[in-house]
Image (cartoon, rainbow, N blue to C red; front, side, top):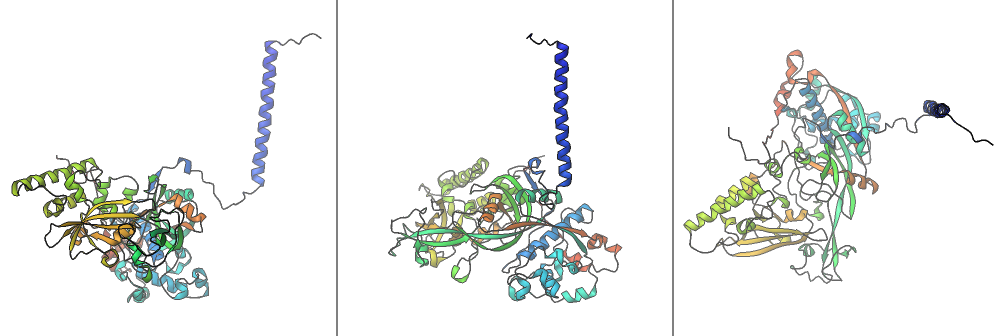
Amino acid sequence: MKPLKFSIQNIIILVGLIILAILSIVAVALSAAALSTDKVPAPNPSYTPNLTSKKAPHKYAVPYSPPLTYQENRGTCWAHAMVGVMQHSYRKNGIEKKFLKPDEYVPFSIQAYAISIIKECQKNDATMKICKGLNNGPVINSTSDGEIAWIYYLTDLYDKLFPSELCPYLPTDADEWKCPKLEEEIQKNKNPIKFDVTELITKYDVDETKDLLREKNVALGLSVLVWDNKYFVPCSANGADDEGAYSPLCKAFDERVACPPSITKVQDDDKCIPMAQPGYTMDGEWFLNTHFEMAGGHGMQIVAYNDNWKTKNGEKGGFVIKNSWHDQIYPWNPSKGQTRGGRGSHSIAYWMGETSLWNERMVCANAHNPDNWLSCTSIASGPTKSIKNRVAQRVVQRLRKNFEEERAANMTNEAAGPVDMCLNSKYINEIVDVMRQPTEFQCNDAERYGCDSQKYRYFLDEITYDENGLATASFVSILKADNKTSGKFVVNQVPPLLVGEAMQPIPEQAERLKNDEDNCGYYWIPYDVLRASTRNGGTWNAEHIEIDWDDSSYLANRDKYPGKDYSLLEKSQKKQKEWHFDGPLPHAKRSQ
């Protein structure tokens, strides 16, 4: 057989035919796929695939967040979250339509609206069916324990939201029904605030919640089952709890259990005190430790996210949460149901990584948080471990140099002791004001920890943390009688929140270091913590409430609505404090 011969022309024709055949096959396949898509419905028609997250910005914050409100000693977190979402929507709408200036906002009466909502829930069988839960507020006739989403279903309440001036929020359950003029104002029918809730969107997924926050550009409600973290404090099995080796809590609590294998003990036969602590730090970061348990539901607001923020516990990425709690130390006594511990928060700018730590302390000093305490004994002897910023170190070094020069000029040749600078009020006051950190502390629970502020002054030496997650805080004590004799006091091996329960800044310094209530109040919940909580029996969801506000709802339009009474609105409208820093140094101003 003779070998086949192909000319270049024949080869070109053959290749062309092959390409045409391939293109025909692809076209048929694509047509089939299109027909298949038209005929076969999606497995879940209500689900919209997340197509934007891969290209989404790594951080985002909604604008115009008004100051937080406080639920105090009541279970009304749901009402504060619901009305908080409404206040934000109202403010954003007002600013965009030029009805409000950018620094103006209107707080609504949470006291009045919580009353109206519970009464509306109880009005008839249909509304009770909307609101009824397991021993929740409408069932037990209380404003405690409700749901943010109720506002979408209770449509008769869209003209019954009043400004805060109608009745203030009262701190205890004993006064939960007090709002003397509420019914009178409802009957007058002259309330200018009117709105319509047109949509409720709920998300249960981190990425979809981030997309929703960006799309709507307004605060979202957050309903979450929160948790307590368990700590195990080693104690002697025979009751011989030497204070140098064991925690003072060993003498305060009788309960003992076998220590988990992960706990490092002083003696092999040690037993442990199991101690449940809230699932957040005094820095406002929620976290899960190895041992945790679900504690109850809580309502808050999501106002931002940052994929790059990393917590002290190591979790990267999370939501910025607007809470309804005070920044303070609460009494800790489990036998009386007092288990809040210490609470602290930050500004949105802090969590977004858009301000320096020094700037942040001007706004949210969190002076009650031991992580923010300053060791003046270290200042006296050299650069303090508590001051990380080099410029701040130079400020303190200048103050120390001035102190030493003045001391040398006015005193004997006696060598300066480690606490001499701590006792000099002139320089300590300047350090406190410049650094926005406390330097002197007093005993907050003498009976449990054995301190005595009547007899001694206390200055922080250092705080360390062990492998069990427990903190040990060492203090220099100075005898008040001679303001000279020094000793040592230690809060040994306690859960970190309890360092603040044991000792707190002296009142003179605490008063000067208060947080700005207009801009603090924001917590951080890591994405991974929400996911881990869900895997272990927890639950959470984010809720967008779409609200259309009537133009009559704004004081700027009162001349257009002569039949409405704007007196309460006029008295309630406020201005929010704003902070502006030129750079990372809060006290630095450029000369002109």
